[in-house]
Length: 480
Image (cartoon, rainbow, N blue to C red; front, side, top):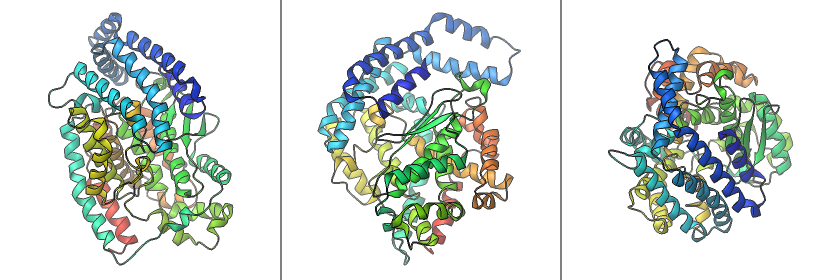
């Protein structure tokens, strides 16, 4: 039923006519309510307890009970009328967010966001918490991690990132990304995106690529992976790296072992782990010079705007560091500052210290403090992300966790596949994908994120891998 819900949501974001919003809201509210009723049924609780009492279960079965217990206990705390109200409001939100973003007018979304915050606080209160309402919301996306633990991890990033950005800003070397902002035919971009997917191992027999206002990925079954991207005629990097990013998600979702894929163990261990797979391919592989030594000779002839632009200039352009308004188009150095901005704002909103009507001004203040720039248009600031309209409050920090996991996983992969860069240079990605599938993808949710990290890398999550990677890469590019 959850996969059926996923198909309806995918349809809403890709091709549903706008006039169907009201009925789709009722459809989704009905299905979400039915799933909730199934999960909280007394017999489910009895079966979980009976399973927990057994001593003959293997590791995967015990993990299944652990995850089902966690979901059952959370769902039983939520009244069905609240679950259906959230599903209904999320569907309404999508339409008002799209309209507000297109008009760059936050006022068109303000009242729906205020209702979203009210329902979110009610949900957190039902779930219960000790330290902050944010804890049970974070647990939706990053199970077993507290807000205090998360704040410590993100806090360790701020200083090194700000320092690196200041050194880059003050460097004698400047990098211009103007070549990416010329005119690029959308149909040619689409054809190249399809080529990238095939090369990286994403089969259109078990998946597809569509267009949406905000790129996303959804795994709707053991052999059904849906990706979306967006094509901008004056920004080539948006589709190229958006496609690689979502491809990483799709490869992860379709790489779960078949016996787990349609159970509650069929998802990734956490959204931080899921995000690590998209950032791994987008940045640790896709922004490497070796990657473009293979692909640039295929890319350049497709676009007249790249005539006379050599590989070195293109490589430097896709890695230029410059504070910008749009998170999904941010460089690797400033990206996590975008996440810190959102983490700060949504904690204040959840705690009731920040009202929806005051959000645009608060956004501008945080942007000035963290990035040194202030968006003039709501579409470039408070309206750029779809997440709050989806009730994904507590989600944004998982993007930063994904960056940290990706760097640590990459370091482990490099030890096990020492010629990985030569393989990338030759367009041979199968061994890298096999490494990820064997160590991460196939396990689904069998291991919690912290345990999976230790199993794969031999260490707990440590920001030093990511910070060392950034310092090495951008130290060379900017001659720091």
